[in-house]
Length: 125
Image (cartoon, rainbow, N blue to C red; front, side, top):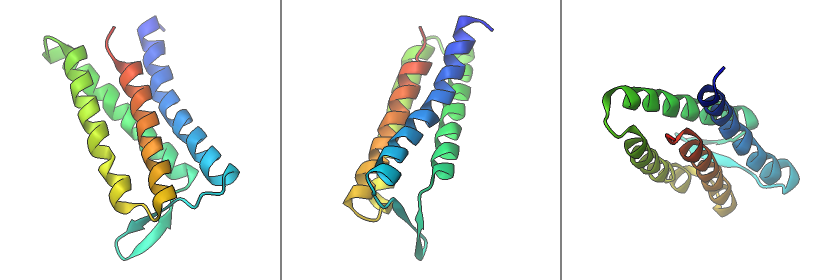
């Protein structure tokens, strides 16, 4: 496996690991109740949801970067602009669905941590 492939793999695995670390510190350690509104009810945000969502974000980012590298003259710049735009838009989720200020802060922090890992880790050399 070449260096670039290792970096990408570490990034795609590192984003969920970082999100799970935030979840572990906030929920079991600090005792934060992490709940979101869904339709007419609420739902707790568990480690499985955090793992799946952040892994999907990493895989989608990797796929986008692969497409950009094939078809765009400046894929690194385009990747960074798109990734940061998606990160900013993703912050609307916690602000609109979190139940309580603590949940909103923890969810926003998870989004920022995953975004930082992906943007920095997948950015073209």
